[in-house]
Each structure stands twice: as structure tokens, then as C-alpha cells.
View (cartoon, rainbow, N blue to C red):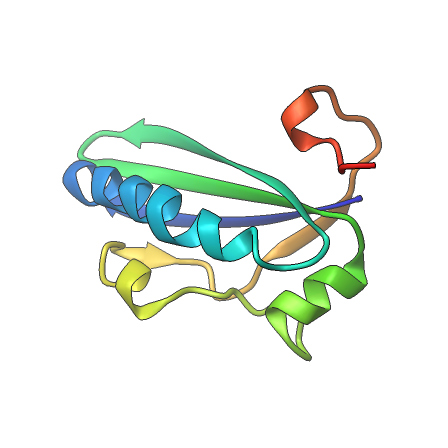
Length: 109
């Protein structure tokens, strides 16, 4: 399995709106892609700003390619999401999942 990491920055109000957008729009869309396993969102307050770290887990790089396109390290950020952020990474990072705990992130068998 492969973890795809992406980060962004927002104000506190924007971060709340982004989280709503993520769970209402992004996750349902991700679930339509073969090979998508799960996601999580971490936030860290830094004064008036919030750092957002999104991790999606995929069964393979081929599944990511199907989702992301020819350049798998290009961030996929909808215009609606970008409008809720003060800044975001244009590139993502991929890591092979060496170990994982949690039923929600295990691929269905």
C-alpha cells in the first residue's frame, strides 16, 4: 500500500470549512476510485494559522496514477478547496506503508 501526503495552510475559519469540504466532497469522490483505501486529516494550530496534513492510502501506485494522472506527484486540488486555503503544496509525497493498524485503513478482501 502507498500513502499519499499533502499539506496546506489556512486560517482557523478556513480550516473548519476545508474539513467540511473534505468529508462532504473529497472523500465521496475518492471512494469512486479503484484502489482507494482510506484517508485521514491532521491539523496543527500555529497562532492564527492552521496547518492541514492530508494522508490518503492507496493499494498501489497504479491506483494513484489512475486518480492523479500522468504526473502522480502533482497535487489534485479542486478550485473549491483551493479557495478555502491560504496556501497549499503543489506537489505531494508518496511513502510505502510498512506497517498499519486500524480496520478502516485495511483494503477490503
